[in-house]
Image 1 (cartoon, each protein chain N blue to C red):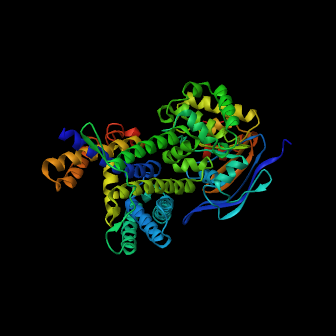
Image 2: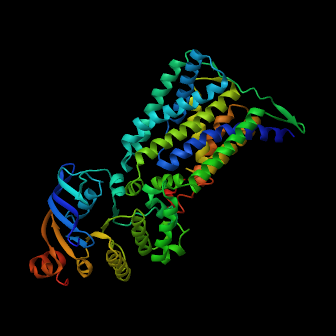
Image 3: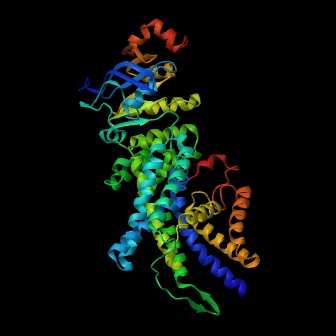
Length: 244
Length: 298
């Protein structure tokens, strides 16, 4: 059970018009583990997540999620299958209240299981008390850290099996980053599989189980934490001297 | 007494503006797009409905749903061909220009369907009544009542129901709403269909008080509805209601004072003044003061 692959990506290629952003990426994520995708700017990390979440279509390759081929399926279908993306820069709905943001996150089951959704919101409030305090405040009026919490909570409302997170630390103060990362660690400990894309490599190294390094659309490393710490060149090139 | 009577006439006439402005507000609120073809799409719906009615010779009870059906159909046509292909941020200007193109196209089709220029329109035949020495047009009282009900129902639907949350989520950020699994394409189409139904009700009520329809009706709708919405507040449903009444009131007084030719001059002067003093409309946000809410939608 421990080694069950929740996500398998084989030779994925995605391009923006003429420019190829992914040139054959093959990664896999184990069920219940925290998989980190690292790499410098423009490496194709976000493109990879967008392709996995069905926002971009791939030209080549295969994506298998929970034993099912989901290559180039629509985002709405993927959300129902249990794949949720927490986008970079949070992208909460600024003019919706915190509670309405959470309801929007439960979009796919809003019509069918309204009561269950309310229960889930209570559970979210128990986990993030600050969101309960702010439940009728407009999302756009909250601080960056609170918005990130809301973005994570909103993604959780779709009951994901796999959570894709794009740069959760972007634009946040170091203290808040620590808080967000402990939330991620906590969610993972509760059994949610996570694929985390992060530029802040040293932070990711603290909590991740498996690591992939992308550079210019290609994956140049994949392995456990021990393995990545041993690879000196990789460390120098992508993580900076201070990392590890 | 005379001024009270003029005020009443003006406000009652303004209810037609309110009805049209609500449809504009709905589309602008959800999609952040100005649909210049709105009036023409209503004219086309009405023209087709009249043509069908001519063939079938139905009673007014059946005529109303026919009007609503064709108005929503023509709105869907506008959405599919003019807004759906340009649904990115870069498409704001393109979609407005193509809505202008569709406006011309629909107006042309409508005038082919209404060849004799002025065409009679079934009237509800509600009589005018007198109360305390003042005269009230019964059909216009009905208009103002229905405009009020529609704006209240829409307001409740948008702010208190789960469909409203989806609508506002799409309006906040269509891309993020997609991430939540929302079919934004469908939401946009449904918004236009809803605007078509609203516009159909508006068109029917307005035309039945006039008992006639001319090929200029589309232009009239677009101009008056747009101005009423801008005065009331961009994308604000309650603003659209009050904006229409205010426009009607001011038009009535100015055209009484200075003659009927001043009606249109008044309309656009008010628009200019409002745009200078409060660019977001009277009940909308002050878009310069409050940059953060610049993107405020319904």
